[in-house]
Length: 535
Image (cartoon, rainbow, N blue to C red):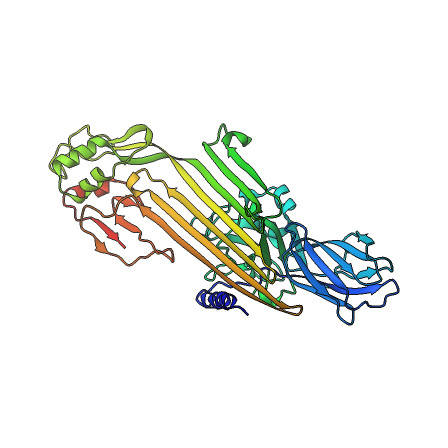
């Protein structure tokens, strides 16, 4: 073994030891069978060549003394199996190999000249006698043709026999949604009487199931970057034995001998939807979910292959809250004059309400139901001063994401190298009538895989794999960094997202919005009833 090969294998093993996510075998298909003549007698030492139709990669094998041959560590795809032996015509068989599949392809040679070629074409058997698994395989044509909510292919897991559930859900995880940009995607699907926590999801050889929340995906790939998806519910291989319910294996596309790609834009907005009974219109919204891919040989020598995919999402929706109540600007002006240094005045002047319309006064000093006025008790509020207003809040919520991926393949005489990279980013916001209390949420994910396979002999090969995935979320980034008044420490903390949040508690504050009521008037006189906590 060369020093370069030893260093690559050692580096892969060293890096793999430091990461929690598992790198299983990415090239998991196998083809085997027996070579016989027309009478059924086995033919030893027959020469067999298995060629990948898309890339032209070839593997060689020789039948054993009992006529048995075997090709292992294969990527899914279309293959051509050629067989020849002295005194027999050559045979050529076209076959399709799925992810994690073991195919039994018997070869029968007829007597004749070696330059004669017999093309064998037959339909796939209804029952695969070489495999006992219960599974559903969805090729790229199916992934492109079926309607996908949010372009997420994960909900198709429920198409497999024995699987029940509703598919992808858009609740329960920060930043989750029915698309490919969530760093935590929950799936309502189960099999074998097990719950969703027993599900396992694999992209090539990388387990993308959360190690913290079983059954939840940390990465959802663009379906245009996937060659096929296999959904299995029993007889798992030792590589994927951790699943007890549903195992979904997704295989990425690789480049081929010719350049190919696609561009699409899934656009929707409110006028594409029919009105519901009794409704006149929808609040404005729109979404552009774009996808573009390109793959082919690596220029200029064409001795390697690449496949690149990118998927941007730009979506926004109108946010409307009708009938919200807030302080009148005239009351704020009075507070600045009468109590310039109180906490309540600083709250009102620092964080005013914005983006409200159809405003009308609902409480005026001295009016029935309004606060007392014209006396020193309690705050000497001038009569006729508007106190509380009511209006409609209108804003825009956005959800913008990007995902891109790159796969590289390179084959040498006795070596095969593979590498893949996925990167997903998502930014969304939380709106608030007081702009400073709006939030900006950021989510990031990347996954990287490397695989090196070295063939030492016809019956010995070594496959070294390394995979890593990182997920990071920074939710609830507020538009301010500190209050302009003193704070006291609190005990509440965010979950594993690793961010800070602000908790406000006061008789004048409800959640992240201010709601001033007559019973809270003393805050402007003494400032003793208002409090804040920051953690």
